[in-house]
Structure formats: structure tokens, C-alpha cells
Length: 334
Picture 1 (cartoon, rainbow, N blue to C red):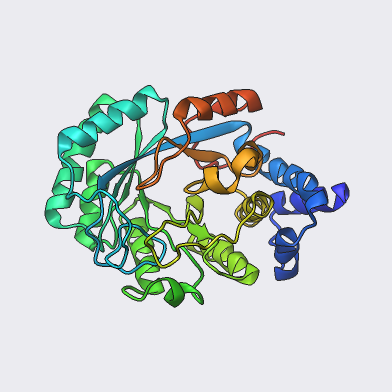
Picture 2: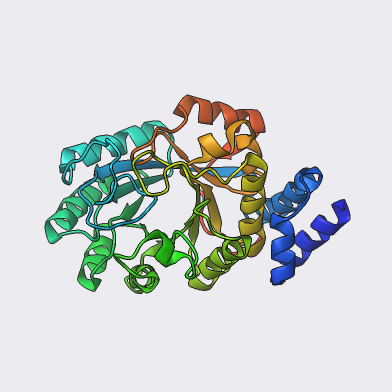
């Protein structure tokens, strides 16, 4: 079986695209083949990213108060989760977050705000902060502010925003089971709008929301078609008070197979292990980085992450380097 997964990895590196049968075989791989599967995924990852790992940090710039009805989200209007709610923070708060990110050797600082989309005043605050951050720190800035208007995307680009995140979250066929207050096409449109403005697109998924394995494959393929430069793979951390409360479909081994699938289908892209990694990958977290090349450090939006010192220790133990990873133009030597 070593030959099977290595041969498939070599074909992917040469430009081959998986068939649906091959993609499903990754998710259905026997657990005894897991390390062999990850070895193949690592060959792809190493070709394009070597042993570098990119660190990202979230600033929850606006919490709760969201009119959307996303079933996974503690910040939505239908959520009963006891979270802190506040309007857009001020520029000084965003600057302090950037300073912390710099101290943690973070490559990308992510400014995230709840809501359907930003007000022009929200954009003013982000623009002002980003302009100053760029003058003081060597950080990439990712903004995640919801559904954008074209003129807002242009302003963010001109201010120095490097990347815009708007996740597809799930497959098109499962979308209406998760939210009905916006469409799947609204999400695709926002990612394309950021691209049109010259901002690098970031879009990912949340696995574990009662989707089928076929839908997981479709999610990975949709992000390939969207040509997202960065793909955050979240694993559902079901929060009490949300419609998905009590949903626990994942185990660590399946999560690793999902990460391998995304690497085989999106070989050249930054794949980031994101929300829910601590509670779903558990003690197998380090193995995820043989497929992925990026992680968040610190806390997420309304849930706690692993201590940043533990993340740095994990990377050191793995022998991986912390780096400001760029989307590669040519494969690196193995």
C-alpha cells in the first residue's frame, strides 16, 4: 500500500487530478493505512512548501450581533450561546493585536468581524489600522468582514490588505441545511470580488456538519475551482446553544484523512488546520502538519485555542520551521 499512496502523490505532483473514486478512497482508507496516506500527502506538501509552517493569528474585531442564521456559529441571531458581544473595536485595539502577532512570529494577522457585511465605518477603522500596521510590522493582513461591496474591496486593497477570507463552509448541496439567510452563491461572489480587487482569496470549510463524504470531496473540488490561495480546514467544535449543539461526528483519524484529501486535491495551496483542531485531532494534532502547512496560534473567535507556547513546542518537536510562506511558483526540491 506504500506504493499505492506514493504513486498517487507522484502523479498529483506531476499535475494529475484525482478521480471521484480516488478521492473517496482517501476518506475511506483503512486506519492501518493512515501513516502511509500521510506519507504520500507529505511528499506533495514538501514539494511545494518544504518543512515550513505558516502561523496565523485571529483578532475578533467584532463579536456577536450577527443577523445571519448559520447553524454552527455562536455569534448568529439564533444562537443561545453565552458569548461576549461588542461592536467593532477601535484602531488602538487592532494595533495591539498586531503587536502581539509580531511577538509570536506570526506571518498573517487576521482581522475578523461578525455580521452579514461591514459598514463603511467598519471599513474605515480597518483601513486606518492596516495602513499603520504595514508601516510598523512585517505582517500580512487577512480581513474577514463578511459579504463585501466592490468599493469596500477596493479600499481594503489600497490600504494594504493582502488576503480576504470568506469561507464556503460546506458543499453547495448542504448549504441550505446550515444557513438560509444568504446563499452559497453569495459566498462565491464575495471571494471572486476580493480577487477582482487584487486581493489574494482565502476560503475554506467546516467539516463535521452532517455532510456526506461525497460532499467533503465536492468542498475540496469547489475550492480548487475557486482557486483559493489559502484554504482553512475547520473541524466542527459544536457549541452549546447553537443548532448543531451535540453534533460529534468526527474522530482524529478521519480528520487526518480529510487533511490528506485537501492536500491531494489542492497540492500547491496553503492548507491551514483551523478551528476545532484541538478538540477533534486531539493528541494527533502534530500528524496533521504532514498534510497541512499552516495553523492558527492563540484563540479562535469564541472558543479557546491551544497555548501558543505549546504550538511552538509542537513545531520544534516536529523539526518544522516557522516561515512566512508564500504561494509557490515552482516546486521546491525534495
